[in-house]
Length: 229
Image (spheres, rainbow, N blue to C red):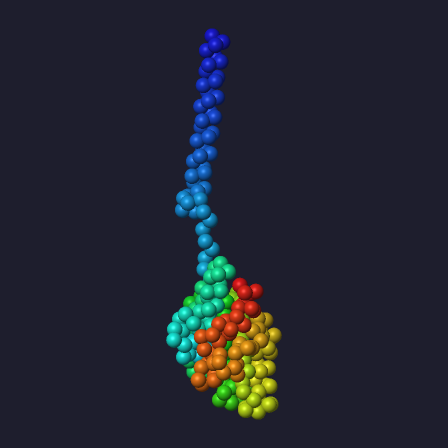
């Protein structure tokens, strides 16, 4: 009788142990199925970096703007850094600050996580009053803040030729750091640093960067933007 009781006890213990192991195995299967059954971590959702600007952003005059414009080069740098962001190029050749203000609502229909504002150069070349350019750029910034309050904001500094007169040139240059400080934006000090005024890095018009120039412009932006991302 004692032998039978011992055998029964051992059998019951074995069944309980098997059931416990089976339950753990089933739990592991459920836990694994949460990531598609691969056991790998799901990639983070991709966020959007939107470049809103004029011909400099659009890649005017380049053979393949989709690959060679400075936002496209920045996209490659983002990819190399393995960061979960995609670049959207919303550059429009000839755009002034007023034109950008008229277009911004349409552009903001898509989700924006990082907004890079590159406008004002055409205002400066046309001699548009600094106060008007400032007002338009601030209105654009306000619209972005209102729709996407959590978006990170970046503004690119611009400069114009001395032929516009020292007072206008200095006042124009000051627009961008002032807006950056007022709106808690990250500032790219001068978009065309190491490119502007250098003939071999610009197209025949002396204004728009060549492919090589665009790479330098991208580096100017990336130096600042990588910290934001």
